[in-house]
Amino acid sequence: MNSRELFSLSGRRILVTGAAGHLGRELCRYLVADGAVVLATDIDEEALEALRLELDPGGQALVTFTCDLSDEGQRISFARAVSSEVSALDGVVFAAAFVGTSDLEGWNVEFSRQSLSTWRKALELNLTAPFHLCQLLESLIRRGSSPSIVNIGSIYGSVAPDWSLYEGLDMSNPAAYGASKGGLLQLTRWLSATLAPAIRVNIVSPGGIERGQVAEFVSRYVAKAPAARMATEKDIIGAIGYLLGESSSYVTGRNFVVDGGLTA
Image (tube, rainbow, N blue to C red; front, side):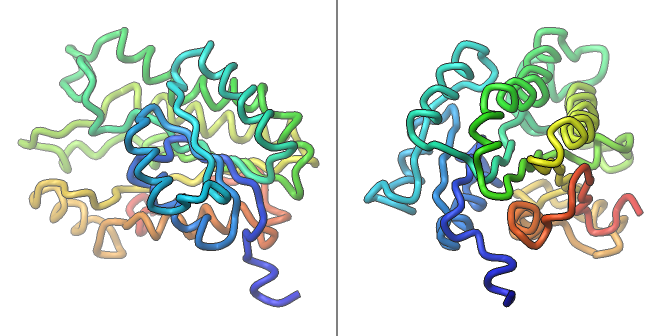
């Protein structure tokens, strides 16, 4: 087997949630360029359409679905739509999530002001949606070729925030974010044991990704990270691509931390 056969995702049918987000967009570009058939979903219909027109105006390599994955009924309808589109899934990437910079009331604020309603919303999208969709799509995934599920976690699913990074800045690290990502990490382990040996399940846990944060935050992060920089989307996609392909056929239940050594 040569390197192209070992790492290629050509012809693989891969579902990506949060496809219009920062990471989701770049992942879809990578997958389509590598010859995969991508089923992309996001709540942002306009952004999804722009991505489709950019990557696959003919509609052969990128199929889009608009869906609010925090809504149980929409998840059920979405799973039915996917089942009508393909007979099997070779890979699933759960990238849809509320993140630290999401614009939610009672979210990116001090602990005493973080709201229960926003806590519940975050756990519904970040944790319940991957659990429920794995249930709904299990039969499709089992019919795939060497199928692989990749959850997108965070270092804050494993470690507490370093508040010195945020001191004096209009930035924070909501409790529900770390709690939901910690739950996703354990769900990954549970699913890897439960769905084995038919389906592999792993999680990629990024550290800070450079997305135009204020200079003071970036300089503080860079000073703490052995790699002396923040991550790019490309750094994360490399790990995801590995876990989706044949090169990781003996890897399951693992947490791939991509943080430039920050938590080392």
